[in-house]
Length: 219
Ligand code: CA
Image (cartoon, rainbow, N blue to C red):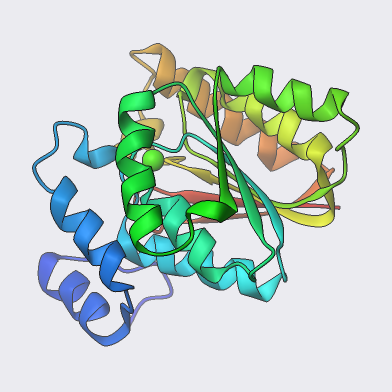
């Protein structure tokens, strides 16, 4: 027995899913539909979606932000966990992907909770701040272009209330973060992780779930 996080082989991973995964039928349908999509790896893992749904309920989130919607699995997970008056402002630049997302949100009956803003996410977040919505949000999920993670993080930190939570995806970046960065994305994630480690504005935990998920609670 070790105190280190287990390396999950396929057998153990499928055991984990088998004894814990509780997907809404539309979540399962969306995941099946995306299995052969060329960007399937941009969809979060189902156990991560379930974990984020639990976080939403634990912190009693109502107003949330998602930076990087893709085809909507993470927003679907969050929307299903939100109360009836809960909402997601989804930032994305792809109509193609978010149109796919919307068909599944509608099928699951949560489409009216999700407001997609088709624009660069920093513009949408800046606009929310300009509208006076700083401190107004409970939860943000950042899962978009890695080079801009720090910009999204700083803007979300302004928009969150104290005690609100930011979840940031792909912070282990396939394990490449331990090697000298050979590309801009890896370098950005390395720098971002270093920065958050020292950031006293937040409480911090980096979870080795899926591709690495950092939780930052605004102090
Ligand atoms: Ca991701």
